[in-house]
Structure formats: C-alpha cells, structure tokens
Length: 108
Image (cartoon, rainbow, N blue to C red; front, top):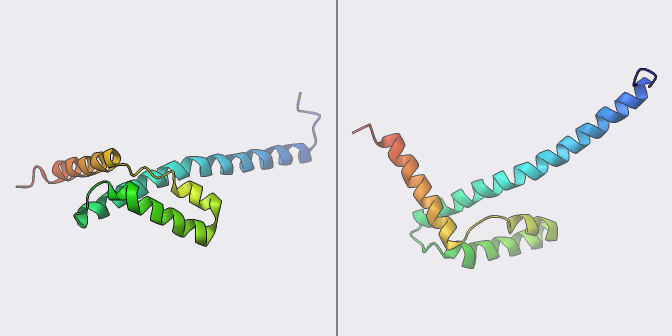
C-alpha cells in the first residue's frame, strides 16, 4: 500500500503529525497551568488572610485587565480559564492543608 510512496510523502506525513502534536500539547498544558495558577492564588489569599471571594471578585478581573492591555484578547481569554470561585479556593486550601498534614503527620 505505501511501498510505492516516495520519501517526501513520509516526510510530509511526519511533519503534519508533529504540528498536530504541538497543538494538542498546548491545549493540554493550558488547563494544567490554570490549575497550578489556581492553587498559587489560593495560597496567596490564605497567606494574606483575605476572604476567599477576593479571587473571583478582584484578582481575576484585575489580572484579566492587565493581561488584555499588555498581551491582547487571546491571552485574556486564557487567564479567564483560571478557576478562582469562592468554592474553588476553599477546596484548594483544603487540599493544601491535607497535603501538609500527610507530609508532617508522622513527624511529631
């Protein structure tokens, strides 16, 4: 079936697959980065003893405006994917607390 194809055909096919792989990797990486950012913001909120609602009511809108002005609408759309609702921040704080307890639990 492919034995009569020349080498350029296979090079083109490989190039096409590599491009698709890069696009797929970017789409997968952004949600991971949004999750990481969500945990980092939760940590900052707790460190500064602010109400959990500040993530959604102040931090996300401020970051969105900054990023839109500096980098454009496409970048702003990516920033808006960061989950920072009150309930999300509460869960992130709980997750981090449980992780600390697991790490420090047996070291008394």
